[in-house]
Every structure is written in structure tokens, then in C-alpha cells.
Amino acid sequence: MLLGSHCSISGGYINALIEAKRLNMDAIQIFTKNQRFWKEKVVTPEEAAEFRAAMKHYGVKQVFSHAIYLISLAAESEEIREKSILSLAAELERCHALGLTHTVVHPGAAGKLSKDAAIERISTSVKEALAISKDTNVKILLENTAGQGSSMGSTIEELAALLNSIASPRLGICIDTCHAFAAGYDIRTTQGISEFLKSVDDLIGMNKLLCFHLNDSKGALGSHLDRHTNIGEGKIGTEPFRYIMQHFPGIPKVLELDPSGEADIRNLTLLRSFAGE
Image (cartoon, rainbow, N blue to C red; front, side):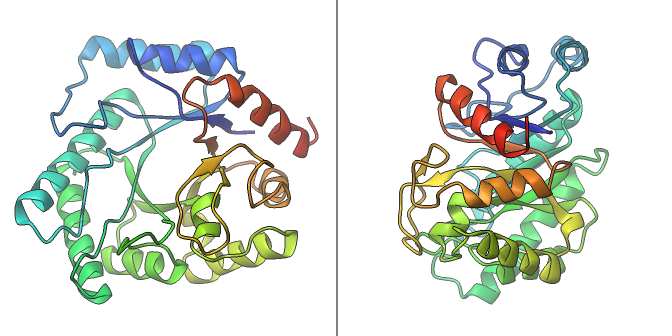
């Protein structure tokens, strides 16, 4: 089913896999380092070997990461942009060491730049990070955003423009349901979610959609409010989640809701029921 949640690595990478086993998850997302700081972490050979072995032992089929939120690929400050590039490249290298398939990253905020200028700056930054990490095959997935402030990637058209500009086989996208709804896509019905994902297919291609973030939304349609809540308890409802579970079994799907993991039990049970389990 490739379903799970974002799991904590507190106390060691392997603890995320132990949590995955506890909740019977076969796909998870993690931070590979403290997401509040620029300081990079180097994965030791021992950590890498232990994690790879534990993935097999606990039956977790796919693990990917979320890059730190400090990364700003369109930053007007050259210092911040350079830090962002190096941080993203280091993230790719950690993922490679641990056996992770890809990392999810927010495209960045345009600030005072025009959208076209921001797309060019993000594209250049991503290309540089890919070049630095050329010895890895880990992919970068650009995540759609809620459209807050000057953030890029809130529309499928912007994501398509970024992918076309970067033009790398190591690039894909992650679709967050809360972000899509908050950005103005009415995905509350079967027709709404199917039309939204058809536009993804038409403009980008489903082969580039490599994971979902399954989150309900506290904010209203088009509110640009990035606030997640439990499945069926927000403004989105259950229908798009039912549709995704039934039509995209092969794409990893993770919750980003409860840091303690306890609410994940209810959410995962509900999602599995949509797939007939």
C-alpha cells in the first residue's frame, strides 16, 4: 500500500523504523538531521549499515526525507542561497548513505523577484545542488505549496515550469493535499481531486509524481493557510483521500499530522479502510 507517516529520528535513525513497524507502515518520511539548524550531520558507515539492515528487517519498503525548512532556493541573499544549495546537496548525500530514494523540498519564496526570475533562480540553485551530489541517484521532489506570501510552487503551472527549466531525471514532485486545497484547488469531491490530478498528468506527467502528503486542512479553500489536521476533520473531508488510496497504490503516501504518532493510528486505519483493508 506504501502508506505511513513522518516519523521521528530522535534517539537514532533506527527509531523511525521501529515506529513504522509499530504502526504497520511500509513507507515513511524522516528528517535526516535537526531541521532547525544549518549545521550538517554526516551519516557514519555504522549508522548507514544499521539503517539499511533495519529497513529490511522491519519490512519498510520506502523511506524518503524532507529537507530542512531553512532552505530558500530563490533567496535574494547570496549567502542564504549558497547555504541552501550546500544544505540540499548534503541532504542528498545523507539520503544516499541511508538508502533513501528521494528528498522533498519546498521550492522557495520569490521575495521581491518576479515569478520568472524566481523560477530561474530556483532552477539554478537546484542544478548546483544536483551537480555537487552527482555521485548519488537520490531525487529531489519539489512540493506544492499553500501559496502563502511569495512562496513558489502553489500552482501546477509553476511546478511544471520549474521541472522544465531544471530538466533533470533526478527531479520529481510531491503533492500535499492540504497545500493544494489552501492554494485554491477544490479537491473535496471525487471529480475535484480527479481533475486536479489530471492537470498534474497533463502538465507534468504522473511519472514525476513520486509521493503524496495526505493532510486535511484547517484553513478554508484558497485561504493560503498551511495548517494540517486529521483526515476527515478539516475542510477537505474524506473523498480525495479515498480516491488517492484507491487509484494510486504504488505511490508512497505519508501523513504529516501528529508528532506523537498516536493520532496516526486512527488516520492510518481510516485510510486503509478506503483501500478496502
